[in-house]
Length: 138
Image 1 (cartoon, one colour):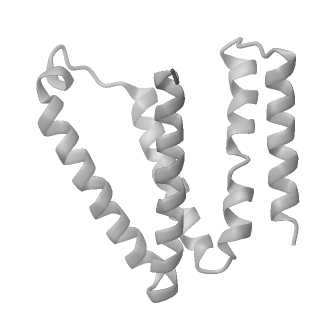
Image 2 (tube, rainbow, N blue to C red):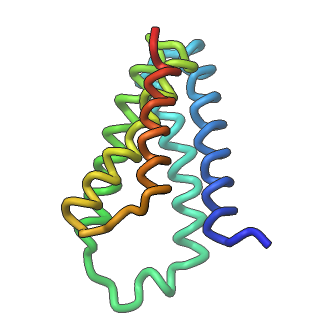
Image 3 (cartoon, rainbow, N blue to C red):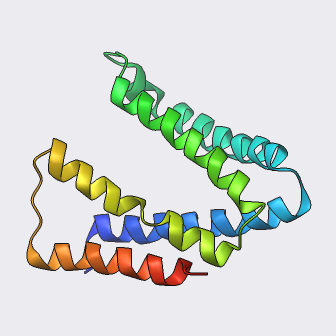
């Protein structure tokens, strides 16, 4: 049976792919600022539903989680930059190039969290970077 984390990752990847695809279609029809506006409405809809279902868990023993807040702020900025780039770049180039970010995350995890990679994991990260570079080569 497939592990839960793997299934969730596949589903998240499908969502990211569809989101990028629809973002490109939206950017062909409108200005980037309005594309981000509607993307934010979609995000707020998911957020509101999540808070309504999990409000008891979220707000019990509440304290501010600054790393999580920074995550949201930085992802938001990244989303704005990605949407701006959608207007000017081919989706087939932009997505593989932006998909190199996990390799940067791995480097941060190695340096700051003390995580270690096995040979197969190292090969996977290296091949992912190489494949993104090959796909993005214009």
